Amino acid sequence: MVAASLPISISAAGEATKPRIASGKGLKLSFKPYELKLRHAFNLAKYQRTTTPDVLVQIEYDGIVGYGEASMPPYLGESVESVTKFLANLDLEQFNDPFRLEEILEYVDSTAENNRAAKASVDIALHDLLGKIMGQPWYKIWGLRPEKAPDTSFTIGIDTAEVVRKKVDEAAPYNIIKVKMGLDNDKELIEIIRSKTDRPICVDVNQGWSDKHHALEMIKWLADKNVIFVEQPMPKEMIAETAWLRERSPLPLVADEFLQRLPDVKRAAEAYDAINIKLMKSTGMHEAYQMAVLARALGMKVMVGCMTETSCAVTAAAHLSPLCDWADLDGNLLIANDCFDGIKIVNGKITIPDRPGISVVPL
Ligand code: MG
Image 1 (cartoon, rainbow, N blue to C red):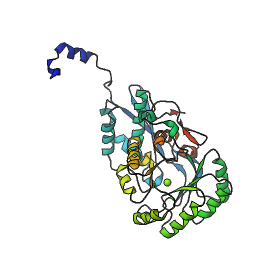
Image 2: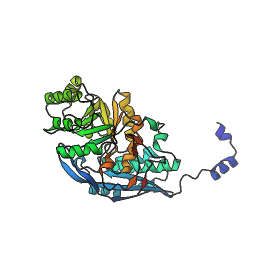
Image 3: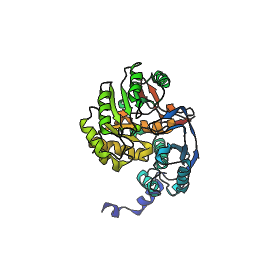
Image 4: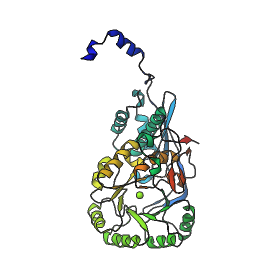
């Protein structure tokens, strides 16, 4: 062996010139609750709300700070209490090399079974930190072309005719409109929008149609209205019915509530044409990237979405968007108290600022 014949003095010199990676100190995690105030009450097929609980997270290492965030829409089962309890239990000080991403995230994942948003907040802050240490934004580290980022859609919730008309005006800078459906006035909602604009529409039913024949009739009607796809048309448990629907549907069906993490992607392929990846479901950027790659390998289309959250998590998700067919990254625009500067929408397209990490700065 060559190494065995090396003189001892080289080894000593090697020791002396070792790059200074570890400062001897571990990663420092801090966090604080932050209530997001919504611009409009958010009406979905199953409930309504005016605020979203959120927790802001920082990981500091060697004087560099990475930012992350957990957003907790109530239906996901996480709360400020569950997230802060999860984060308080973590011991990140034990890690003194932030580049051991796999090892750190495996540890974080192993400390509790669910808590996906809490896990995402750590993952996002760690990615921000690593990108800043490397001096590069994540789309570059992943080797993606930012010009390939798709148009993002602007969401219009279920509401009165008057509010819907107002929201169509608000959606003017966007090339695609996303409509929440799943109540009795579904067709009326589309007709109101079509009376004002012929821009393409994406439809999100949020599991609102439980009769497959009604779902098929609705989708056929929507196909004539310049609709691009239908997201989560039926309850997530109705897999056989959704597969039946997909065989007959003229529009692609996108899985959202049906799937959370990487192992769910293969199951989704049985009944859906595409998946909607969100960082708060996937436990962050690391697994979200893997999900996008796997879905593509399975011949599925990929969409990246978000919750109502600040520009922190929305911009983190935007780094993945050049790998996606569709993007629904308007969660930051739905809140009145955004505390980060991040992505901008220019002519309907996602534009990531030229900054390292996840490309955000606190306001
Ligand atoms: Mg959805």
